[in-house]
Image (cartoon, rainbow, N blue to C red; front, side):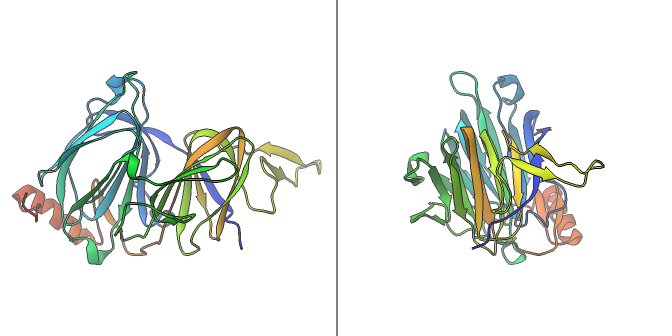
Length: 304
């Protein structure tokens, strides 16, 4: 057994998307190798309706899969194939854009005006870039939940974990997508497939992600001019993404208020990425073709 060391901790940054939705982005529209097969991760949390009601009007996707997980409020969605629906608190939508789809997502807050959810983009390998689009809409009640003896709670969206299998299936990256809550001051070891890239996104509480050889909650910095050592607080808090190096397990030590995070892993595709906006292909020629088809009306390959 080998514990995964922390490669980097990234604080999500404010950005604006869609028709003016204010959100936080942990990664996206940059170098993809460290997160492969994942391309982008957004946290759209807001308590001011004016910052999210404009939503994400009609826009295209090709060559990727989008995963939307709602914690508070609702998201109305529709697409060019005639699909319509609403995602509520606890629900998941896994959309395979494949050869091309036009869709929109319009958020609405809860009774208190709060909206909170996440969107993750996963890449498709070249062999599936032009596959038929499809949806997997999963009500929150169908997502299995595992409760450990120490009070740790894990919702299993996709993949196998602790004897439970998530309802989202048939995904190219073979991902595991978990919503993990660890009680205050508890230490937890969570298995991750060794061949997968993995990250955690903290969205409530705080804690430390360390390997077995380092103290929890602190790093020791040596080699100062006076020969002393200093301890640096190393609590990972709200809206921070923890990118892990290779290994079998992730170790988390919850802080005094506990910690809740998404633990996401998937097998890297390791193919060239040609990316512009919501379309991700393998070459610039394929990218140019996609945008030419958008202009001449041949982008959609599947009829409603």
